[in-house]
Length: 567
Image (cartoon, rainbow, N blue to C red):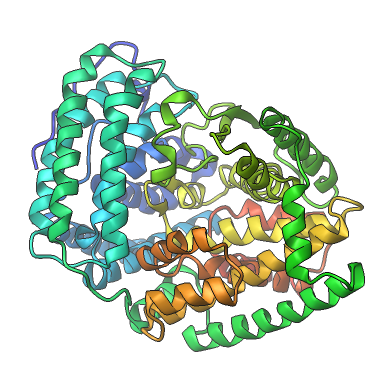
Protein backbone atom coordinates (compact mmCIF):
# COMPACT_ATOMS: atom_id res chain seq x y z
CA UNK A 1 0.00 0.00 0.00
CA UNK A 2 1.32 3.42 -0.98
CA UNK A 3 1.48 5.99 1.81
CA UNK A 4 2.42 9.65 1.53
CA UNK A 5 5.92 10.62 2.57
CA UNK A 6 6.10 12.89 5.56
CA UNK A 7 6.66 16.59 5.06
CA UNK A 8 7.48 19.08 7.76
CA UNK A 9 4.80 21.63 8.51
CA UNK A 10 5.90 24.73 10.47
CA UNK A 11 4.49 24.91 13.96
CA UNK A 12 3.25 21.33 14.09
CA UNK A 13 4.58 20.40 17.52
CA UNK A 14 3.20 16.86 17.44
CA UNK A 15 5.58 15.98 14.60
CA UNK A 16 8.45 18.27 15.57
CA UNK A 17 8.90 16.99 19.10
CA UNK A 18 11.60 14.33 19.75
CA UNK A 19 10.67 10.69 19.46
CA UNK A 20 8.44 10.13 22.47
CA UNK A 21 9.28 6.45 22.73
CA UNK A 22 12.71 7.50 23.97
CA UNK A 23 11.76 10.45 26.10
CA UNK A 24 10.82 8.50 29.24
CA UNK A 25 13.68 6.03 29.07
CA UNK A 26 16.54 8.15 30.29
CA UNK A 27 15.06 8.51 33.74
CA UNK A 28 16.67 6.52 36.51
CA UNK A 29 19.44 5.10 34.30
CA UNK A 30 17.22 2.41 32.83
CA UNK A 31 19.51 1.32 30.02
CA UNK A 32 18.25 -2.29 29.83
CA UNK A 33 14.57 -1.41 29.74
CA UNK A 34 15.32 1.20 27.05
CA UNK A 35 16.50 -1.60 24.77
CA UNK A 36 13.41 -3.76 25.13
CA UNK A 37 10.81 -1.02 25.54
CA UNK A 38 12.15 1.09 22.68
CA UNK A 39 12.39 -1.89 20.38
CA UNK A 40 8.91 -3.11 21.20
CA UNK A 41 7.31 0.33 20.81
CA UNK A 42 9.06 0.84 17.48
CA UNK A 43 7.69 -2.52 16.31
CA UNK A 44 4.19 -1.78 17.61
CA UNK A 45 4.12 1.64 15.93
CA UNK A 46 5.35 0.20 12.64
CA UNK A 47 2.31 -2.05 12.34
CA UNK A 48 -0.18 -0.03 14.40
CA UNK A 49 0.44 3.67 13.76
CA UNK A 50 -3.07 4.63 14.88
CA UNK A 51 -2.28 3.08 18.27
CA UNK A 52 0.93 5.11 18.29
CA UNK A 53 -1.00 8.34 17.87
CA UNK A 54 -3.26 7.46 20.79
CA UNK A 55 -0.18 6.68 22.90
CA UNK A 56 1.43 10.02 22.06
CA UNK A 57 4.35 8.42 20.18
CA UNK A 58 5.85 10.88 17.72
CA UNK A 59 6.38 10.64 13.95
CA UNK A 60 3.53 8.25 13.14
CA UNK A 61 0.53 10.58 12.86
CA UNK A 62 0.50 10.66 9.05
CA UNK A 63 0.56 6.86 8.59
CA UNK A 64 -2.08 4.16 8.30
CA UNK A 65 -1.53 0.47 9.05
CA UNK A 66 -0.15 -1.76 6.33
CA UNK A 67 -3.02 -3.92 5.10
CA UNK A 68 -1.19 -5.37 2.09
CA UNK A 69 -0.70 -9.08 1.47
CA UNK A 70 2.82 -9.06 2.91
CA UNK A 71 1.94 -7.30 6.17
CA UNK A 72 1.49 -10.46 8.26
CA UNK A 73 4.79 -11.96 7.13
CA UNK A 74 6.59 -8.69 7.86
CA UNK A 75 5.07 -8.59 11.31
CA UNK A 76 6.10 -12.18 12.00
CA UNK A 77 9.64 -11.33 10.99
CA UNK A 78 9.60 -8.38 13.39
CA UNK A 79 8.31 -10.61 16.16
CA UNK A 80 11.18 -13.06 15.58
CA UNK A 81 13.73 -10.24 15.82
CA UNK A 82 12.21 -9.01 19.08
CA UNK A 83 12.28 -12.50 20.58
CA UNK A 84 15.97 -12.67 19.70
CA UNK A 85 16.61 -9.28 21.27
CA UNK A 86 14.76 -10.19 24.46
CA UNK A 87 16.60 -13.49 24.69
CA UNK A 88 19.97 -11.75 24.28
CA UNK A 89 19.27 -9.04 26.86
CA UNK A 90 20.75 -9.96 30.28
CA UNK A 91 18.44 -10.23 33.26
CA UNK A 92 20.97 -10.03 36.10
CA UNK A 93 20.64 -6.28 36.72
CA UNK A 94 16.91 -6.02 36.08
CA UNK A 95 14.84 -3.94 38.47
CA UNK A 96 11.06 -3.70 38.60
CA UNK A 97 10.71 -1.60 35.44
CA UNK A 98 13.02 -3.77 33.38
CA UNK A 99 11.36 -6.95 34.61
CA UNK A 100 7.87 -5.76 33.74
CA UNK A 101 8.93 -4.40 30.34
CA UNK A 102 10.37 -7.80 29.48
CA UNK A 103 7.20 -9.58 30.60
CA UNK A 104 4.86 -7.16 28.82
CA UNK A 105 6.79 -7.28 25.57
CA UNK A 106 6.99 -11.09 25.65
CA UNK A 107 3.29 -11.48 26.46
CA UNK A 108 2.29 -9.06 23.73
CA UNK A 109 4.42 -10.88 21.16
CA UNK A 110 2.85 -14.21 22.10
CA UNK A 111 -0.68 -12.81 21.94
CA UNK A 112 0.01 -11.07 18.63
CA UNK A 113 1.50 -14.22 17.15
CA UNK A 114 -1.48 -16.28 18.28
CA UNK A 115 -3.79 -13.70 16.74
CA UNK A 116 -2.00 -13.83 13.39
CA UNK A 117 -2.31 -17.62 13.41
CA UNK A 118 -5.85 -18.07 14.72
CA UNK A 119 -7.80 -14.80 14.48
CA UNK A 120 -5.98 -12.45 12.09
CA UNK A 121 -7.16 -8.85 12.12
CA UNK A 122 -6.85 -8.81 8.32
CA UNK A 123 -9.94 -11.07 8.18
CA UNK A 124 -11.95 -8.76 10.44
CA UNK A 125 -13.94 -6.17 8.44
CA UNK A 126 -14.43 -4.04 11.56
CA UNK A 127 -10.67 -3.75 12.09
CA UNK A 128 -10.41 -1.84 8.82
CA UNK A 129 -13.33 0.47 9.60
CA UNK A 130 -12.17 1.13 13.15
CA UNK A 131 -8.66 2.01 12.01
CA UNK A 132 -10.00 4.20 9.20
CA UNK A 133 -12.34 6.11 11.49
CA UNK A 134 -9.94 6.70 14.36
CA UNK A 135 -6.96 7.40 12.14
CA UNK A 136 -8.73 10.72 11.56
CA UNK A 137 -10.82 11.15 14.71
CA UNK A 138 -7.91 10.33 17.02
CA UNK A 139 -5.94 13.30 15.66
CA UNK A 140 -8.88 15.66 16.17
CA UNK A 141 -9.85 14.82 19.75
CA UNK A 142 -8.80 17.38 22.39
CA UNK A 143 -5.22 17.09 23.61
CA UNK A 144 -2.47 19.25 24.99
CA UNK A 145 -1.01 19.61 21.48
CA UNK A 146 -2.16 21.46 18.35
CA UNK A 147 -4.13 19.56 15.75
CA UNK A 148 -1.55 18.11 13.30
CA UNK A 149 -3.18 19.43 10.13
CA UNK A 150 -0.75 17.91 7.67
CA UNK A 151 -1.07 14.49 9.35
CA UNK A 152 -4.88 14.64 9.09
CA UNK A 153 -4.56 15.44 5.39
CA UNK A 154 -2.00 12.67 4.85
CA UNK A 155 -4.21 10.05 6.46
CA UNK A 156 -7.28 11.25 4.54
CA UNK A 157 -5.27 10.96 1.33
CA UNK A 158 -4.09 7.45 2.23
CA UNK A 159 -7.53 6.06 3.18
CA UNK A 160 -8.64 5.05 -0.35
CA UNK A 161 -5.51 2.90 -0.83
CA UNK A 162 -5.92 1.41 2.65
CA UNK A 163 -9.54 0.48 1.93
CA UNK A 164 -8.59 -0.87 -1.50
CA UNK A 165 -6.17 -3.23 0.24
CA UNK A 166 -8.94 -4.10 2.69
CA UNK A 167 -11.36 -5.04 -0.09
CA UNK A 168 -8.68 -7.22 -1.67
CA UNK A 169 -7.94 -8.97 1.62
CA UNK A 170 -11.63 -9.65 2.29
CA UNK A 171 -12.39 -11.02 -1.18
CA UNK A 172 -13.58 -14.57 -0.62
CA UNK A 173 -13.17 -14.20 3.16
CA UNK A 174 -15.65 -15.06 5.87
CA UNK A 175 -16.42 -13.29 9.16
CA UNK A 176 -19.10 -13.59 11.83
CA UNK A 177 -22.22 -11.80 10.57
CA UNK A 178 -22.36 -9.52 13.61
CA UNK A 179 -18.84 -8.26 12.92
CA UNK A 180 -19.58 -7.61 9.25
CA UNK A 181 -22.74 -5.71 10.20
CA UNK A 182 -20.76 -3.55 12.60
CA UNK A 183 -18.16 -2.81 9.94
CA UNK A 184 -20.87 -1.77 7.49
CA UNK A 185 -22.40 0.59 10.05
CA UNK A 186 -18.99 2.04 10.95
CA UNK A 187 -18.03 2.63 7.33
CA UNK A 188 -21.31 4.40 6.58
CA UNK A 189 -21.12 6.53 9.72
CA UNK A 190 -17.49 7.50 9.11
CA UNK A 191 -18.24 8.49 5.51
CA UNK A 192 -21.07 10.69 6.75
CA UNK A 193 -18.73 12.21 9.35
CA UNK A 194 -16.13 13.07 6.73
CA UNK A 195 -18.79 14.86 4.67
CA UNK A 196 -20.83 16.54 7.39
CA UNK A 197 -19.08 16.35 10.77
CA UNK A 198 -15.48 17.10 9.86
CA UNK A 199 -16.25 20.65 8.59
CA UNK A 200 -17.72 21.44 12.03
CA UNK A 201 -14.40 20.85 13.79
CA UNK A 202 -12.87 24.14 14.99
CA UNK A 203 -9.53 23.24 13.35
CA UNK A 204 -11.04 22.23 10.02
CA UNK A 205 -8.80 23.09 7.10
CA UNK A 206 -10.57 23.70 3.75
CA UNK A 207 -7.64 22.02 1.98
CA UNK A 208 -8.90 18.73 3.46
CA UNK A 209 -12.18 18.83 1.53
CA UNK A 210 -11.11 16.96 -1.61
CA UNK A 211 -9.22 14.31 0.35
CA UNK A 212 -12.17 13.86 2.74
CA UNK A 213 -14.59 13.47 -0.16
CA UNK A 214 -12.42 10.77 -1.77
CA UNK A 215 -12.06 8.98 1.56
CA UNK A 216 -15.83 9.09 2.14
CA UNK A 217 -16.43 7.64 -1.32
CA UNK A 218 -13.95 4.84 -0.55
CA UNK A 219 -15.73 4.08 2.73
CA UNK A 220 -19.09 3.83 0.96
CA UNK A 221 -17.52 1.49 -1.61
CA UNK A 222 -16.04 -0.62 1.18
CA UNK A 223 -19.43 -0.87 2.89
CA UNK A 224 -21.01 -2.04 -0.36
CA UNK A 225 -18.46 -4.84 -0.82
CA UNK A 226 -19.23 -6.28 2.62
CA UNK A 227 -22.36 -7.91 1.22
CA UNK A 228 -20.00 -10.47 -0.29
CA UNK A 229 -18.38 -11.48 3.01
CA UNK A 230 -19.70 -14.90 4.03
CA UNK A 231 -20.73 -15.74 7.59
CA UNK A 232 -18.60 -18.01 9.75
CA UNK A 233 -18.95 -19.39 13.29
CA UNK A 234 -18.15 -16.97 16.10
CA UNK A 235 -15.99 -19.29 18.21
CA UNK A 236 -12.28 -18.46 18.23
CA UNK A 237 -11.49 -21.83 19.84
CA UNK A 238 -10.62 -23.11 23.30
CA UNK A 239 -6.88 -23.05 22.63
CA UNK A 240 -7.00 -19.39 21.61
CA UNK A 241 -9.10 -18.19 24.56
CA UNK A 242 -6.87 -20.11 26.99
CA UNK A 243 -3.77 -18.63 25.35
CA UNK A 244 -5.18 -15.17 26.02
CA UNK A 245 -6.03 -16.08 29.60
CA UNK A 246 -2.55 -17.44 30.28
CA UNK A 247 -0.32 -15.14 28.24
CA UNK A 248 -2.19 -11.82 28.33
CA UNK A 249 -3.93 -11.95 31.70
CA UNK A 250 -1.46 -14.08 33.62
CA UNK A 251 -4.09 -16.47 34.99
CA UNK A 252 -2.85 -19.73 36.45
CA UNK A 253 -6.16 -21.45 35.65
CA UNK A 254 -7.99 -22.25 32.44
CA UNK A 255 -11.41 -21.80 30.90
CA UNK A 256 -13.20 -24.51 32.88
CA UNK A 257 -12.07 -23.11 36.23
CA UNK A 258 -13.05 -19.59 35.19
CA UNK A 259 -16.52 -20.84 34.26
CA UNK A 260 -16.84 -22.69 37.57
CA UNK A 261 -15.97 -19.56 39.58
CA UNK A 262 -18.17 -17.25 37.53
CA UNK A 263 -21.13 -19.64 37.62
CA UNK A 264 -20.91 -19.94 41.41
CA UNK A 265 -20.68 -16.17 41.77
CA UNK A 266 -23.58 -15.60 39.38
CA UNK A 267 -25.82 -17.87 41.46
CA UNK A 268 -24.62 -16.43 44.79
CA UNK A 269 -25.10 -12.84 43.67
CA UNK A 270 -28.61 -13.74 42.52
CA UNK A 271 -29.42 -14.93 46.04
CA UNK A 272 -27.86 -11.81 47.56
CA UNK A 273 -30.07 -9.65 45.36
CA UNK A 274 -33.18 -11.48 46.55
CA UNK A 275 -32.16 -11.23 50.22
CA UNK A 276 -31.25 -7.54 50.13
CA UNK A 277 -34.40 -6.62 48.22
CA UNK A 278 -36.50 -8.42 50.86
CA UNK A 279 -34.80 -6.39 53.60
CA UNK A 280 -35.44 -3.10 51.80
CA UNK A 281 -39.02 -3.69 50.62
CA UNK A 282 -40.54 -7.18 50.88
CA UNK A 283 -43.41 -6.16 48.59
CA UNK A 284 -41.19 -5.57 45.53
CA UNK A 285 -38.70 -7.82 43.75
CA UNK A 286 -35.10 -6.75 43.28
CA UNK A 287 -35.79 -6.24 39.59
CA UNK A 288 -38.60 -3.79 40.41
CA UNK A 289 -36.48 -1.93 42.93
CA UNK A 290 -33.56 -1.61 40.51
CA UNK A 291 -35.90 -0.44 37.74
CA UNK A 292 -37.28 2.25 40.04
CA UNK A 293 -33.80 3.79 40.33
CA UNK A 294 -34.11 4.91 36.69
CA UNK A 295 -36.73 7.43 37.82
CA UNK A 296 -34.38 9.11 40.32
CA UNK A 297 -32.16 11.72 38.75
CA UNK A 298 -31.84 15.21 37.30
CA UNK A 299 -34.99 17.19 36.65
CA UNK A 300 -34.02 18.23 33.14
CA UNK A 301 -31.50 17.28 30.43
CA UNK A 302 -29.58 20.50 31.04
CA UNK A 303 -28.94 19.40 34.64
CA UNK A 304 -27.11 16.20 33.65
CA UNK A 305 -23.72 17.84 33.18
CA UNK A 306 -23.78 19.47 36.62
CA UNK A 307 -24.88 16.18 38.19
CA UNK A 308 -21.87 14.42 36.67
CA UNK A 309 -19.50 17.11 37.94
CA UNK A 310 -20.99 17.07 41.41
CA UNK A 311 -20.88 13.29 41.76
CA UNK A 312 -17.31 13.15 40.45
CA UNK A 313 -16.23 15.71 43.06
CA UNK A 314 -18.02 13.75 45.76
CA UNK A 315 -16.39 10.48 44.69
CA UNK A 316 -12.98 12.19 44.78
CA UNK A 317 -13.62 13.50 48.29
CA UNK A 318 -15.20 10.36 49.72
CA UNK A 319 -12.66 8.05 48.11
CA UNK A 320 -9.60 10.02 49.28
CA UNK A 321 -9.44 8.00 52.50
CA UNK A 322 -9.15 4.79 50.46
CA UNK A 323 -6.91 5.77 47.53
CA UNK A 324 -4.99 8.93 46.67
CA UNK A 325 -7.07 10.56 43.91
CA UNK A 326 -5.45 12.14 40.85
CA UNK A 327 -6.23 15.78 41.62
CA UNK A 328 -3.02 16.88 39.91
CA UNK A 329 -4.41 16.03 36.48
CA UNK A 330 -7.59 17.76 35.30
CA UNK A 331 -10.70 16.02 34.03
CA UNK A 332 -13.07 18.41 32.25
CA UNK A 333 -16.67 17.27 31.78
CA UNK A 334 -18.15 18.90 28.67
CA UNK A 335 -21.12 18.45 26.39
CA UNK A 336 -20.21 16.33 23.38
CA UNK A 337 -18.97 18.70 20.67
CA UNK A 338 -21.24 19.07 17.59
CA UNK A 339 -18.81 17.39 15.18
CA UNK A 340 -19.00 14.12 17.10
CA UNK A 341 -22.71 13.86 17.81
CA UNK A 342 -23.76 11.96 14.70
CA UNK A 343 -20.82 9.58 14.47
CA UNK A 344 -20.24 8.70 18.15
CA UNK A 345 -23.04 6.16 18.47
CA UNK A 346 -21.85 3.99 15.59
CA UNK A 347 -18.20 3.80 16.63
CA UNK A 348 -16.06 2.78 19.59
CA UNK A 349 -16.25 6.43 20.60
CA UNK A 350 -15.64 6.51 24.34
CA UNK A 351 -16.83 9.45 26.43
CA UNK A 352 -13.54 9.17 28.32
CA UNK A 353 -10.28 7.96 26.74
CA UNK A 354 -7.02 7.29 28.51
CA UNK A 355 -4.81 10.33 27.82
CA UNK A 356 -1.76 9.72 25.59
CA UNK A 357 0.86 8.63 28.09
CA UNK A 358 3.73 10.31 26.25
CA UNK A 359 1.84 13.54 25.55
CA UNK A 360 -0.72 13.79 28.34
CA UNK A 361 -0.66 17.54 28.88
CA UNK A 362 -2.38 18.92 31.97
CA UNK A 363 -5.77 17.30 31.65
CA UNK A 364 -8.28 15.49 29.46
CA UNK A 365 -11.86 15.89 28.28
CA UNK A 366 -14.81 13.74 29.26
CA UNK A 367 -17.71 14.01 26.82
CA UNK A 368 -21.32 13.93 28.02
CA UNK A 369 -23.86 13.31 25.27
CA UNK A 370 -26.69 15.86 25.14
CA UNK A 371 -30.33 14.91 24.92
CA UNK A 372 -32.03 13.91 21.71
CA UNK A 373 -35.73 14.11 20.96
CA UNK A 374 -36.72 11.52 23.61
CA UNK A 375 -36.01 13.44 26.81
CA UNK A 376 -37.69 10.85 29.03
CA UNK A 377 -35.41 8.07 27.78
CA UNK A 378 -32.41 10.42 28.10
CA UNK A 379 -33.16 11.19 31.75
CA UNK A 380 -33.68 7.51 32.53
CA UNK A 381 -30.33 6.68 30.93
CA UNK A 382 -28.75 9.45 33.02
CA UNK A 383 -30.38 8.57 36.32
CA UNK A 384 -28.39 9.33 39.45
CA UNK A 385 -27.15 5.76 39.84
CA UNK A 386 -26.09 5.48 36.20
CA UNK A 387 -24.22 8.79 36.33
CA UNK A 388 -22.70 7.88 39.68
CA UNK A 389 -21.42 4.46 38.64
CA UNK A 390 -20.59 4.84 34.95
CA UNK A 391 -19.29 8.39 34.70
CA UNK A 392 -18.29 9.60 38.16
CA UNK A 393 -16.76 6.41 39.57
CA UNK A 394 -15.92 3.81 36.90
CA UNK A 395 -14.46 6.22 34.36
CA UNK A 396 -13.85 9.43 36.31
CA UNK A 397 -12.63 10.34 39.84
CA UNK A 398 -10.85 7.35 41.42
CA UNK A 399 -11.64 4.97 38.54
CA UNK A 400 -9.92 5.06 35.15
CA UNK A 401 -8.95 8.71 35.64
CA UNK A 402 -6.82 8.07 38.73
CA UNK A 403 -5.52 4.68 37.59
CA UNK A 404 -4.35 6.11 34.25
CA UNK A 405 -2.65 9.04 35.99
CA UNK A 406 -0.71 6.72 38.26
CA UNK A 407 0.17 4.42 35.36
CA UNK A 408 1.89 7.28 33.56
CA UNK A 409 4.48 7.33 36.35
CA UNK A 410 5.04 3.55 36.41
CA UNK A 411 8.60 2.27 36.45
CA UNK A 412 7.83 0.08 33.45
CA UNK A 413 7.71 2.10 30.23
CA UNK A 414 5.36 -0.35 28.54
CA UNK A 415 3.07 -0.34 31.59
CA UNK A 416 2.53 3.36 30.96
CA UNK A 417 0.98 2.80 27.55
CA UNK A 418 -0.45 -0.75 27.66
CA UNK A 419 -3.89 0.46 28.75
CA UNK A 420 -4.24 3.05 25.98
CA UNK A 421 -7.74 3.15 24.48
CA UNK A 422 -7.27 2.59 20.76
CA UNK A 423 -9.55 2.13 17.76
CA UNK A 424 -10.81 -1.28 18.89
CA UNK A 425 -10.07 -1.67 22.58
CA UNK A 426 -6.97 -1.56 24.75
CA UNK A 427 -3.51 -1.41 23.15
CA UNK A 428 -2.28 -4.43 25.14
CA UNK A 429 -4.84 -7.02 26.23
CA UNK A 430 -2.54 -7.71 29.21
CA UNK A 431 -3.59 -4.37 30.71
CA UNK A 432 -7.21 -5.44 30.96
CA UNK A 433 -7.50 -7.02 34.40
CA UNK A 434 -5.89 -3.94 35.96
CA UNK A 435 -7.69 -1.33 33.86
CA UNK A 436 -11.19 -2.79 33.99
CA UNK A 437 -10.75 -4.79 37.18
CA UNK A 438 -9.78 -1.60 39.02
CA UNK A 439 -12.65 0.46 37.60
CA UNK A 440 -15.20 -2.19 38.60
CA UNK A 441 -13.53 -2.72 41.97
CA UNK A 442 -13.75 0.94 42.95
CA UNK A 443 -17.47 0.98 42.20
CA UNK A 444 -17.88 -1.33 45.19
CA UNK A 445 -15.01 0.26 47.13
CA UNK A 446 -16.99 3.46 47.59
CA UNK A 447 -19.64 1.47 49.41
CA UNK A 448 -17.08 1.43 52.27
CA UNK A 449 -17.59 5.18 52.68
CA UNK A 450 -20.59 6.51 54.61
CA UNK A 451 -23.70 7.30 52.58
CA UNK A 452 -22.17 7.32 49.11
CA UNK A 453 -24.75 4.74 48.02
CA UNK A 454 -28.32 4.30 49.22
CA UNK A 455 -29.53 0.82 50.15
CA UNK A 456 -31.41 0.56 46.85
CA UNK A 457 -28.26 1.58 44.98
CA UNK A 458 -26.46 -1.33 46.63
CA UNK A 459 -28.87 -3.56 44.72
CA UNK A 460 -27.61 -1.90 41.55
CA UNK A 461 -24.02 -2.68 42.57
CA UNK A 462 -24.87 -6.35 43.07
CA UNK A 463 -26.61 -6.43 39.70
CA UNK A 464 -23.49 -5.00 38.03
CA UNK A 465 -21.29 -7.62 39.68
CA UNK A 466 -23.67 -10.34 38.53
CA UNK A 467 -23.65 -9.05 34.96
CA UNK A 468 -19.87 -9.05 34.94
CA UNK A 469 -19.85 -12.65 36.14
CA UNK A 470 -22.35 -13.45 33.39
CA UNK A 471 -20.00 -11.92 30.83
CA UNK A 472 -17.26 -14.35 31.85
CA UNK A 473 -19.61 -17.21 31.02
CA UNK A 474 -20.48 -15.77 27.63
CA UNK A 475 -16.88 -14.87 26.75
CA UNK A 476 -15.70 -18.41 27.35
CA UNK A 477 -18.70 -20.48 26.27
CA UNK A 478 -19.05 -18.51 23.04
CA UNK A 479 -15.41 -18.96 22.05
CA UNK A 480 -15.15 -22.61 23.09
CA UNK A 481 -18.19 -23.26 20.88
CA UNK A 482 -20.47 -24.33 23.72
CA UNK A 483 -22.91 -21.46 22.96
CA UNK A 484 -23.93 -19.89 19.69
CA UNK A 485 -24.34 -16.10 19.58
CA UNK A 486 -28.09 -16.64 19.73
CA UNK A 487 -27.81 -18.80 22.86
CA UNK A 488 -25.43 -16.29 24.44
CA UNK A 489 -27.87 -13.48 23.66
CA UNK A 490 -30.74 -15.40 25.25
CA UNK A 491 -28.64 -15.88 28.40
CA UNK A 492 -27.83 -12.17 28.59
CA UNK A 493 -31.48 -11.24 28.13
CA UNK A 494 -33.36 -13.94 30.03
CA UNK A 495 -31.04 -14.80 32.91
CA UNK A 496 -28.52 -11.98 33.32
CA UNK A 497 -31.09 -9.19 32.98
CA UNK A 498 -29.44 -7.17 30.22
CA UNK A 499 -31.78 -4.72 28.50
CA UNK A 500 -32.96 -6.25 25.20
CA UNK A 501 -31.66 -3.28 23.23
CA UNK A 502 -28.17 -3.79 24.62
CA UNK A 503 -27.81 -7.51 23.91
CA UNK A 504 -26.85 -7.34 20.24
CA UNK A 505 -24.04 -4.88 20.95
CA UNK A 506 -22.72 -7.02 23.79
CA UNK A 507 -22.68 -10.13 21.63
CA UNK A 508 -20.87 -8.32 18.83
CA UNK A 509 -18.25 -7.18 21.30
CA UNK A 510 -17.90 -10.72 22.67
CA UNK A 511 -17.43 -12.11 19.17
CA UNK A 512 -14.91 -9.49 18.01
CA UNK A 513 -12.79 -9.29 21.14
CA UNK A 514 -12.20 -12.69 22.79
CA UNK A 515 -10.85 -12.57 26.31
CA UNK A 516 -11.97 -8.99 26.97
CA UNK A 517 -15.25 -9.39 28.83
CA UNK A 518 -13.92 -11.99 31.26
CA UNK A 519 -11.25 -9.56 32.52
CA UNK A 520 -13.73 -7.28 34.34
CA UNK A 521 -15.01 -9.72 36.92
CA UNK A 522 -11.90 -11.88 37.14
CA UNK A 523 -9.73 -8.77 37.52
CA UNK A 524 -11.94 -7.48 40.34
CA UNK A 525 -11.76 -10.85 42.08
CA UNK A 526 -7.98 -10.85 41.86
CA UNK A 527 -7.78 -7.39 43.42
CA UNK A 528 -10.04 -8.50 46.28
CA UNK A 529 -7.82 -11.53 46.86
CA UNK A 530 -4.67 -9.38 47.00
CA UNK A 531 -6.32 -6.99 49.43
CA UNK A 532 -7.14 -9.86 51.76
CA UNK A 533 -3.46 -10.82 51.75
CA UNK A 534 -2.11 -7.25 52.09
CA UNK A 535 -0.22 -6.60 55.31
CA UNK A 536 -0.45 -2.78 55.44
CA UNK A 537 -3.17 -0.15 55.60
CA UNK A 538 -5.93 0.15 53.01
CA UNK A 539 -4.91 3.28 51.11
CA UNK A 540 -1.34 2.01 50.86
CA UNK A 541 -2.64 -1.14 49.17
CA UNK A 542 -4.56 0.75 46.54
CA UNK A 543 -1.81 3.29 45.86
CA UNK A 544 0.77 0.52 45.56
CA UNK A 545 -1.41 -1.56 43.24
CA UNK A 546 -2.07 1.11 40.64
CA UNK A 547 1.50 2.45 40.69
CA UNK A 548 2.55 -0.70 38.81
CA UNK A 549 0.68 0.70 35.80
CA UNK A 550 -1.20 -1.23 33.15
CA UNK A 551 -0.09 -4.77 33.92
CA UNK A 552 -2.02 -7.94 34.77
CA UNK A 553 -3.25 -7.90 38.36
CA UNK A 554 -1.66 -11.35 38.75
CA UNK A 555 1.78 -9.86 38.01
CA UNK A 556 1.18 -7.02 40.45
CA UNK A 557 0.48 -9.65 43.08
CA UNK A 558 3.76 -11.39 42.29
CA UNK A 559 5.64 -8.10 42.67
CA UNK A 560 3.89 -7.39 45.99
CA UNK A 561 4.87 -10.84 47.23
CA UNK A 562 8.45 -10.29 46.02
CA UNK A 563 8.53 -7.07 48.07
CA UNK A 564 7.21 -8.87 51.17
CA UNK A 565 3.91 -6.96 51.18
CA UNK A 566 1.54 -9.95 51.19
CA UNK A 567 0.80 -12.51 53.85
